[in-house]
Amino acid sequence: MSEIKTMLEQMDRYNRLKRESQTEDRATVMAALKACGITKVVIRYDGYGDSGGVEDCQVEGGQGQESLSVPMQTKLVDWSSAETTSHTAPLREVLETLAMQYVDVEHSGWENNEGGAGNVAFDPIADKITVSHTENYISYEDFMHTY
Image (cartoon, rainbow, N blue to C red; front, side):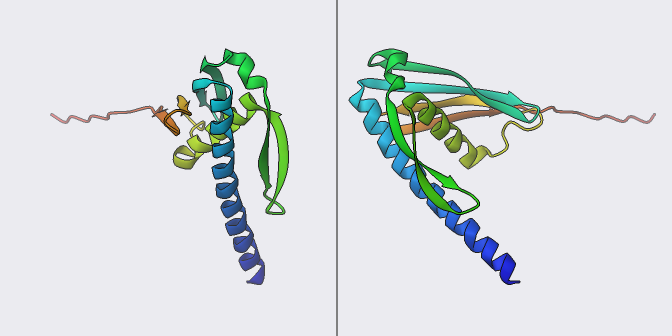
């Protein structure tokens, strides 16, 4: 029983650290976008059949795509130790990772079966991140008639 309790405590710690790092990374990303003069970034994602990911990244303002090569420091949370470590990556990679984290908040497993697609819009001026998501599904209608 103590093994299960230990695992649950680790899950709680991991989830708490993940939320905290996501909040910090969000603030860091928004500040970086403003500093680069970027007014909007839209990350488009798509997937089905148990795989999917980022398909496109559109940038408004700043130096366009060049602005996204700026290195940024973020936090990674390791599941096995439930500890955070620093990680440096280009702004574009950080944006893509953060976008997919926000998609997973409400639509975890979106890429499974028929999948889904959508956009994650970063608006540093309004300090908003908006996820627009579409779930794909197959619909059947069965009919039986006896005369």
